[in-house]
Image 1 (tube, rainbow, N blue to C red):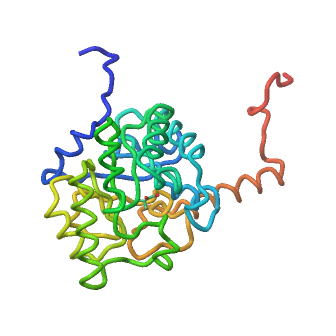
Image 2: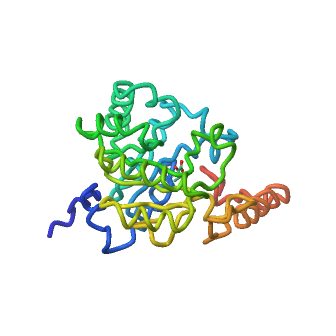
Length: 272
Ligand code: KIV
């Protein structure tokens, strides 16, 4: 075996083969250093348009631009070696027509090197999912709570509370699968609904605020690492980085103020 054996990135077919065999681990990443830290532990890195809220401080994902997604997408690809990288298509970059979606999704694939795009929408986007998939662009379809529909949903509320909306979300999932989606992201849906969809589709389902029965799980990394004060119900904190950052920053400020940092060992051309 060569010392410099290339690490092969997971492909869509590798991920699809995990359905029914092993849980698929997904986390968001927006930057190269974060991608480098997560890469060995996950199957998929997602450049979510949640970066608009998490990194840029917007109050929704709607202001995120294609240029922002491409810049962060390329950084995540540079920072990772083995995960499949999926990039969100931002609001207004794909909804107008299949042609618009193709042009912009092709830019994402060409300019970032990622292997799949994610678009929000069910039946209404099925024609677009088909147009992209048939032309070589793998699509993860995002159904249930769709943050780009925040004004239509009237906030970020879990979906599938009554029979009519349950049936609509099932139809969304089936329509996207039939149109060629390679995976489904189920966000903020009733648990039993996510379990039913997972059982009915042949493609993997990735859940967030969905069900343990989904084929995989995704969280926003900053949420599960404790970089925010508030954690939503569907998040578990696996670390408390806020406390650690606060401790480190306070120690640095104290060291500067008390002239304990820098010492001569941190300086160049020091006097003998
Ligand atoms: O944008 C994002 O981070 C997402 C996750 C909520 C899955 O779509």
